[in-house]
Structure formats: structure tokens, C-alpha cells
Length: 83
Image 1 (cartoon, rainbow, N blue to C red):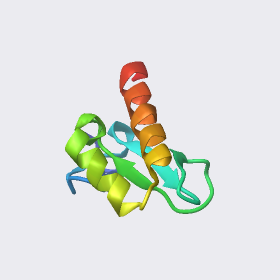
Image 2 (tube, rainbow, N blue to C red):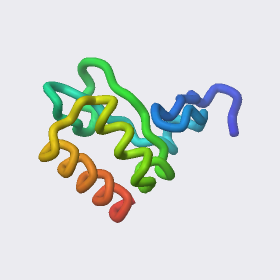
Image 3 (cartoon, rainbow, N blue to C red):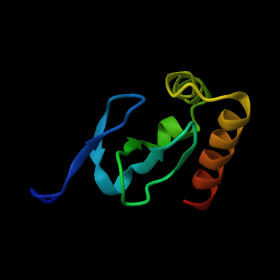
């Protein structure tokens, strides 16, 4: 690990990792999607992206509806499958 590589924190487990190891997401109007380059964002580690208990907690934190939370879970599973 180089000295100047950025380190970020996972929003679910609060573990710190290299920025390139984390998934960067953004929320807008109860919709969670990949970071577009504008606005605020958050990071999620790959372990928390596959942990159903952590995902359920995140859906409550972001106050997502049932449809939005199902879409969020589907998106995280797709990210996990594709790398």
C-alpha cells in the first residue's frame, strides 16, 4: 500500500479500506444508484454488500420503500456477480 492512497470508511460496518476496494453509491429521492460525479456519496464494502442483515439496516437508514429496497438488493447482487 502506498502512502498517498485514499482510505474511505464503509457506511455499514465502519471499517476503513482503500477507496478502490469499496463500492461508491449515491442516494437521491429514495433511489440508490452508482455515483454520478455530482452531489454527496457513500461507500460500501463488498462484504456488507452481500450481508443481508447489513442491507436491511441500510434500507431502514435510507427510508427506502419495499420496491426501492428490492431494487437496491438486486443492484448489490448484480455488482457482486459482475465484480
